[in-house]
Length: 457
Image 1 (cartoon, rainbow, N blue to C red):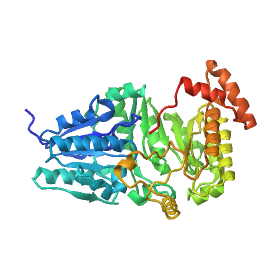
Image 2 (cartoon, rainbow, N blue to C red):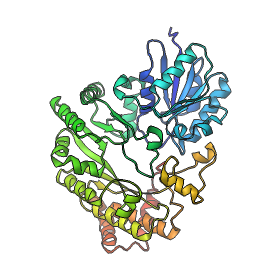
Image 3 (tube, rainbow, N blue to C red):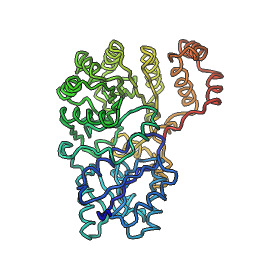
Image 4 (cartoon, helix red, strand yellow):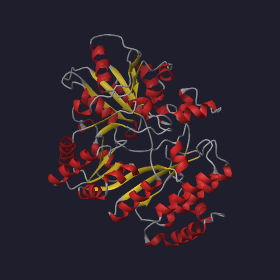
């Protein structure tokens, strides 16, 4: 009979199936000889609240990782269900939303403890104190960023890996090799949480763990979920060399800044491709240099062009992300963004150019400026649960402009798609994109009636 004290960790429901890496990290950092850990993922459960309530019987605590937006609804529902069934069981919230809004989270009666920032050591301390019979409440943690090499390897046996494969439709494992970001983008909340710190696993460890995951789970693709994977050139060089030396026959994806690609050069990027790199995500944000400077991206448009040209020559897939609708952004800036997005989309069938609408998210200068200008942020957890930071149009954008961009997004997405059965839509979309004419969007209306757009948050 297992008499070890139990900790229950919960991942709230969401529309994507990235593995719950934050919870795996917390669980792996605990002393598993003394503590039993159960991870429940609401995305895999028919009745998440019932599963967590059952697992929480006699548990030391229930921990949850909470993102802003819709996941808060589920986190609140499950937290309240646990409190109703087990009033003495402490509820611990961590993750991005509690790190930015600890006091708001603690105002919720069902939440006892909030972890701010990196959580491995902090959560281990909380569990140890609860194990010793102490009462724990309030805010824990801060801006300190510990070296990831201090922590043990993530134990993927804590989750049903093959169920994630089934949901994803491919044998893809999510993985974190670094944490934090050195850059200062004026619209990003990361500097407020990690104070522009960065820490990464040693290249040999990354390759060894990738080899273990491949051997154990039959992994075909490794998805690096790092915010800035290509931060250090020498580290990337060593990771690619280690993958090649070990003969790892896996594909992998990662985040890449255009200026990093420019400085890194095609020789090293080609080595990464030989080592299995198949797709990168590049945050361009804007096609206007003036807007990029205002966003403090520390990026030149020629870096974007150079990175795109390298990726074309290497047949490397790219997702170029853009944002429009910043406060005070004029039509010329938005038009420049649409023009660059279309130009990049036309370069290669494996290039994608999604466009998102700016919504202020606290913890950065641009959000502070928006607040000073009269923008009102959500005032409660319930309001934050209804906050959609990628799906709705910017409050600084007219509905007419939004309709134009939505049509542009549809036609630019289809104009260069592969597939013989798509040729009528592709031809119509290319005609429209060539002429910058998106009026009377009959094709868009029909396609979205037959297949409604997927929810993104």
